[in-house]
View 1 (cartoon, rainbow, N blue to C red):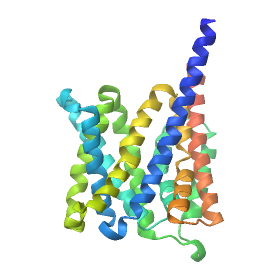
View 2 (view 1 turned 120 degrees about the horizontal axis):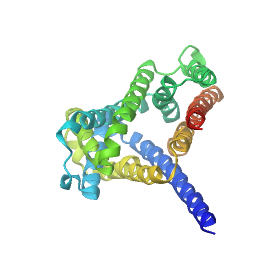
View 3 (view 1 turned 180 degrees about the vertical axis):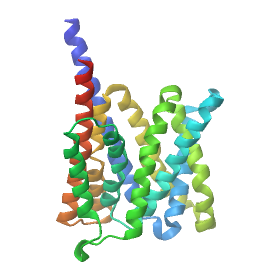
View 4 (view 1 turned 60 degrees about the vertical axis):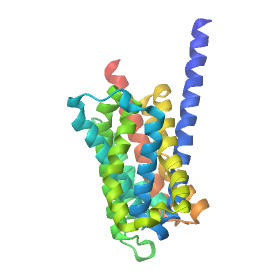
Length: 295
């Protein structure tokens, strides 16, 4: 009876955690779609500054990390984590300004995929690498009918690199600082993004309407999803999380369609699906390899 109750508890935790991840992805990408509506008013730099600054304030009030100051030897990793968080936001919003959201996130998710594939030891991982390469080939602007903005693609690839480094730095600080790492990281990100936002957008950043929408974006794209993800990490195994996060491009493309009316071509949808398969498959493969080594 005890075993049955424990099994039900684990199943419930998995269900709640998986739901938290899906809710996080929806929240984050709907927030990004709303953020894109602010681009004509304050620009991508201004929106990034608003999002990170307001999210930092919200997370500081929520977690109060100053009560548990990080140790000095952890500061380099914490600063690296925050810097990658800030640059990732900065670059992906520049990509959003030039590309459909689904395409930009499809490229950005290559960052976590690269982290998994670099540690790959199995030949089957070549399948996921091939799927990722095929998806990239379909997205790259080599055909006039499906050509995408080259600078936007460069920004998206930059965001992917930052996401990979964000994961590597985050692994160290999250185990020691927990939610405090998110708060301090967002403060560092805000310090990086605020100067550029102030320079490019100026006083319009402080207008009530812009601040109101910026607050909605900060909640939807940062404060709420990061909190949900922390809850999911407590309940869901890492490989399941990776598979769930691999759906991010599809969620982003759907948010772009319904909020912004961004319609992707069948070829672009095919590319996104291939990248999602590569991301989810490589994560599942890595988990299987770990289980095989442990057995």
